Length: 157
Image (cartoon, rainbow, N blue to C red; front, side, top):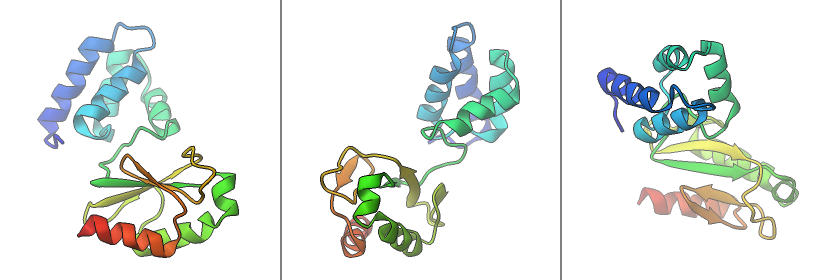
């Protein structure tokens, strides 16, 4: 993931060259920036807004509205915890409390060691086997506190 200021400026400049004149180009621009940097740096929002002919508030509004966009780096692995009704009915609230306690973070945060980020989702499409979580690209079913600890210990090993 690029981290230097010069690199982020170059990534944004390339994306602006590609999308500035495209109707509805903000979304693909933001996706491209995030794909190349890993997040959309707050300090580049003004550049994006200026290049797209938008206000900073408009760009920030899009970034903050869509859960797939992040304005800070994520952990090496992102844990998505399902909060949909089926999962809640089968214990996801207790799992949520356990996960937050075990990781020491809340939704939208990353562990101090940079290993894990925690995000809420509202359906993983695994409603027959709740509660469910996704770690990276892998969905896990019927997760309780014990199963979560086993998964976490396996990832950390």
